[in-house]
Image 1: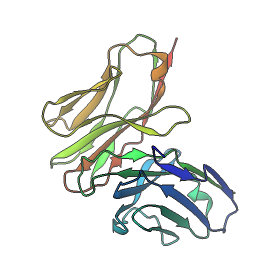
Image 2: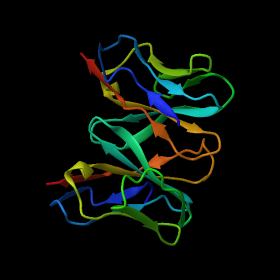
Image 3: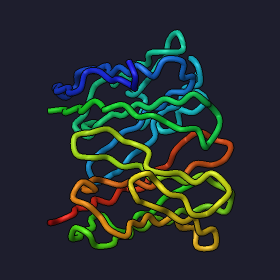
Length: 116
Length: 113
């Protein structure tokens, strides 16, 4: 597709369950980012991939959060034993230039996660 | 650590009035600066960016922002807003040698007829 896509668009889960969120970056983009948008918290950086490796995972809030990227393309963000405070919109972005602060990042529409 | 402050969480304004959305960042090093816009039920879109050169940058829909290094500010302005400008606006900063965008908490611009 032409842009960054994310699935599912909405996810409702029960507290304690695991969830997987998927991001398909723009074809050819080497850098991929995950952000979280919570009500009243703004946008928080979670993790950054350059190719399949993650040079910066400093934003992951706890060890319940993990992410991987395979084939330099699709990325999956996994949240284990979800808690209500994990409820947020999870945004993925990609760019064609990594390790360059001015690289233009294209954002996906997000996955809205609700933990009951 | 980098931080971005958007002092106004909401800015109500009438159509055709001027508007300024404030953004300040905390950094003593050179940075790149961005404004992103999120229209209702849509994803984040880049509105404009400052990388280097002229301190005044413009978008295609009439917004402009001026980089002021001494005041560490990057305020967004538009001389005459439209109803369609109603959206959430996010200011963001990144270091020259890292690739992590740090966002402000956003300003909701509400334009009334």
